[in-house]
Length: 477
Image (cartoon, rainbow, N blue to C red; front, side, top):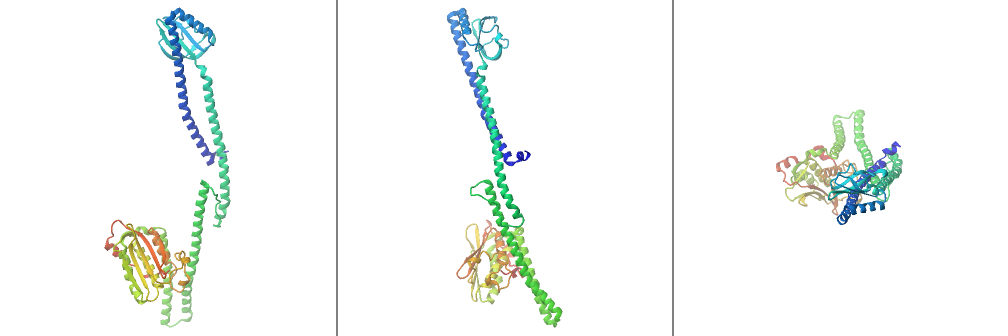
């Protein structure tokens, strides 16, 4: 019983019952008031009409004729149905159904409600009208109990309505509780499997749209995302283990070879340089993962400033021009002029550097790479890096931004598969997304940024927009 009372469905049903009772009370109160006012005014009008009729008799036939008329009316009427009394100026009875003027009724003209003593017929509640007929007093009244049955029926109907509302509310609460428990039990049968690691289970849903079904669909969507993230973490963990295994195995092999063979100093230093390169590769992996973690957590938003993205891109192009010349690749830059955006200059420079480095790896000899910064609307600017290399197959476009993903075409190139992942994370941090578009042949990578209302300060942009150096530029997709 306690569980039933504490049930949310029953509690909700009882709240609706309380609301219904309140509405019923608000409906019945003015109805009852209108009933009382209408009945009372109608009865007063009847009493006033009776009093006027008796006054006409008094005018025509005098006090004796009125006394005879009243006595005749009293003999003909139903007992206690109508109260009539004619008295002289001293309130001594002359005719009527009362033996004395009621003590609770003033002799002044007006309408009064009072208890009237009817002698052997007992006492009754009555509404009376008092009028003056010259030196005489006339009292005309009617029993209030005439309308008592109607009032009883009104209260009886109201009581029945309240009872029906309570019973219906309780039944609805119980039925709703059972229906909810049935749905919840089906959900509870699924959740233990999910808790124990089987993320392929989903909560049962129905075709029609209702609250629990919407909640189940929302939870299923969340489970889809959790499953995807868990698989992503597993894949990343496997990829990290795989990518760390190679440099660590090489490092161990070099050190073991040095320990066993004790080669000459020159060869020893060469092996030490190779060991340092292996350690640097491991450090680059962890540095990239740390930067991605900071970006995913939004920690780098504190570094947002207003900067000229055209100036930032120009610096990146200037930085890579020597590398492009060594491969006979034409590195071009195109800009619509100074474009002020709000962002982290270090991260944006890192992302742009990764894109240019990627293009340099895949562009053919005597190829062309173009870095473009252009305004696409009054509120947005676009950074793009285009090349005429082999491009990316449509089936792999969604995969190349996954962390540690390496396509077949990139197996023979240096890198750990974090370059485009970092670029996409930077784009998301800046409220954008990475778009990979085919050029046939080649690829165009686009990132859109929101523009500032006020232009950036050139000096601040020039100072902070220089591309990162060292390990930061060594992350290859």
